[in-house]
Structures are given as C-alpha cells and as structure tokens.
Amino acid sequence: MSSTFGKIFSVTTWGESHGPAVGAVLDGCPAGLPITEEMIQAELNRRRPGQGKVTTARNEKDQVKILSGVFEGKTTGTPISFVVFNEDQHSNDYAEIAKWYRPGHADLCYDLKYGFRDYRGGGRSSARETIGRVAAGAVAKAFLKTVAGTEFLSWVASVGNVDCPSLDLNALTLDQIEASPVRCPNEEASAKMEAAILDAKSNGDSIGGTVSLYVKNVPASLGEPVFDRLDALLAQAMLSIPACKGFEIGSGFAAARMHGSEHNDEIYFDGTAYRTRTNNAGGSLGGISNGEPIYCRMAFKPTATISQLQKTAGRGQENGELAAKGRHDPCVAVRAPVIVESMAALVLADLYLQQKRNCLE
Image (cartoon, rainbow, N blue to C red):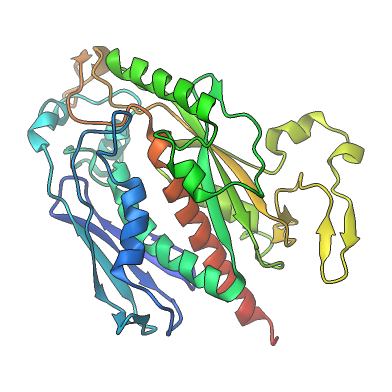
C-alpha cells in the first residue's frame, strides 16, 4: 500500500479510523524551523469532527502529540512523528458492513484487492487518515511561510446547486472563511449551503460540494517537468484526498471554450519581477510556477455512507439491501479546506527543496 507522499519533504501516514491511533512521520524538514504542538493543533481543530450541525457527530478532540524530531521548539532535521489517539469510536455501528458493501464506498474495492479489510469506519479509506496529512501540512506551511512568505486560503465554493459568488481574493482572509459554519465567506451563500446540507441530512442523505484553493507568494520556478509538473503533482495530491473526484487549475475546463487570444496571460515586468495581468494559467506554465498565485478548484462527491435503504451485494455474493449506520458528514466538503491547504503545502515544500537541490544559487 502506498502511504508515502513526496521525495525530499515526504510524509508517511499510518493508522485506521477505528484503530488505537492515527498519525504520520514527516521526513526531510530542515532543522531550526520553529514548531509547536499548538501550531499543529490549530490546524487539526479546523478538520476535527463534531464542529456543528453540518458535520459528523463523532466527538474527537484530535489532540496531537509530537513524538520526535522537535527539540526546544525547533525541528532537529530528523523525522518528525505525530500521533493522535482515537477516543470516540462506535465500531458496533459497522457490524452490518462486515457483510454488505456500501454503495459508493471503497469497501468492495479493498476486498477485491486484499481479500480482507478493516470494515470499522472504512479503515484506511476513511477520511480520518487525513489527520496525518494536516499535521505534516502544518509544518510545510510554517516552512514555506518562513522561506517565501507563502500563504494558503481554501474555502467551500459550492454545495449542491448553491454557488459562492466571485470573491476579492486579495482581500479574503482566513477569519472570514472560518466565521461561516460551512466555510463559505459569502454570508448569503453560506446560509443557503447550510440549509441544503441540513436538508440532505434530515433525509438520511448527503450532498456534494466544491472547494477552492488560493495560494499567495508562491516562489517562481517550482515544478519538475515532465512528469512531476507542479499542476500534475497538485492534481495527484488533491485527488488522493478521500471523496475528491475532480481537479482543475486556473481557467480549468473553461479553457476548452476559449481562444488563445482570450486565454493567454499577458506578461509584463513590474520593475522587480515578471508578472501576468490575468491568471488563466492558475500560477503554473509548463508545469513550473510563474510566481503568480496558484488557483485551483476541487470537486468532492457526496458522502458515500448514508442511512437510506440502498440495494447492494454482500461478501457471500448474495444481493440484498443496506441502510448504513454510523456517524458521517452529510457534506465532506465542509471539513476539506484545511486538508486541501495541507496537501498543497506538502507539494510546494517538496518542490522548493528539489529546486534548491537543482540550482547553485
């Protein structure tokens, strides 16, 4: 099983949703970076369950402990190990799933691949695995902030048919995003999204959504063509997040409806650096960052586990019906922004170190 991401700045996640704990080991972080458990906890608090009516009722504190790699508040250059203990598992809720495959979930594919699976909460296919990503991503964010002033913002751009209007991205703040119960910084759209999620929840159903990412102060020259292009690695990172089914950068699929005269971003020199007047490229050209902000959008499917009765098949090759039990997010997009930011930070931190390796200056 592939559980490691990155080449120099690399993270390996471990643990299962209903096991004793989940966590990660981060390798390749340079020594001397100020890191505290409080910094990492602040990020984990943004993805933890039980945040309100629109998230799962599973009540986990997600309290992180750093086991290695940090001494006197600074990284030592050795592997950094994080652990978060699971405290509120209801494994009995999943007794029926030991026999029946949940439609839309990874149950069937894990069984077909391994011939055995941890059915409690989905095991490694559970979004609880992303705790390790967020912990490592917090370190990646701190590293990029220190070396380049890079900043990450992610928000819910749509839920079902409700869209967030265009935003002034240069004025957008984390506080505005986090003030919304669904992490949409537009008050009117936020209220409609919340209503759509609660309606799905009341019907034993779930609903999908999209998440946007905006990264400011991205160093130019990041990306390793041809296969480790910046946009290719970002796509891999985002599509590795549970329930993420789509990725686009810059103008994305809209580019297919444009002429080159519309899509090409005009280049100019502002006296200190090369800039573009528009950003249809989304910050990446030829798989290399051009110094403009990275702008991406990700599509998240509706949560697979719902309480409505659905037709399915069982491990014994029999056909039947299942109304799944357990506590699940009615819209996974709501807790996704910090995970999206973390994966982007891991990509950029790794590429930054690769670029330093490639160049004498």
